[in-house]
Length: 248
Image (cartoon, rainbow, N blue to C red; front, side, top):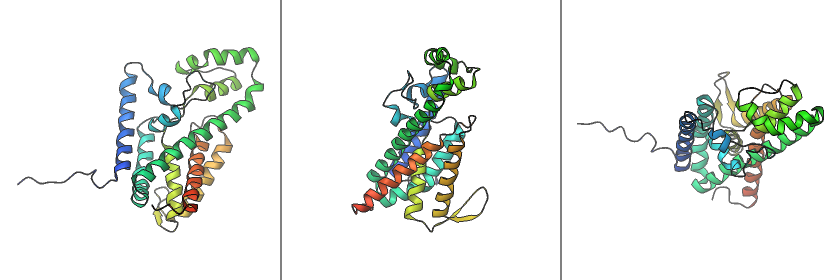
């Protein structure tokens, strides 16, 4: 008699399940497209608005792109662990709205922070070199190189590299979980100690804020995008609570 193990995806709520599938498929598509010399991150990743590659749709599509398997795994793991609880509480429609608004909000914050950083260094770049960055910067980045001048190189990275990942939405989910279930005990992996959800969210948010202001040029993590996801998530939860429909 054959054994029926059932569908392992059956217990996952619909929106979380489909988000997991879409994100995995997009990483596979990115890998396949690269073999044909097509860079999907260039088309779908979020570029600064001064870049020739910026398109408004990237505020949505960037959150379905990832920089590799590790990046994808940690985002999807958090989505699976915390997102399925929120979808069960809120329902599919509200959870999807929350996920998308946190992701779009994170992208908006990332664009404005990038603009502030560009304005802070643009005066340090020779005008002729600035024109070179604007004309040839993208090609230089895609060749795996950058400008020798430190300020020009930093400016080029800010303008011509894309932001990808679901982290903004995921950080919004972490904040929501901490707000709805503040006293739930979470077992951390590093270090392996228990911690209440509210303290986990506070510590994680403070760490992101510190790393964002540290502005390490070798740090490729969009810390302010993470904070943007939390900010927009907080505003949306407060709005729902004020209108007494957070659980509807």
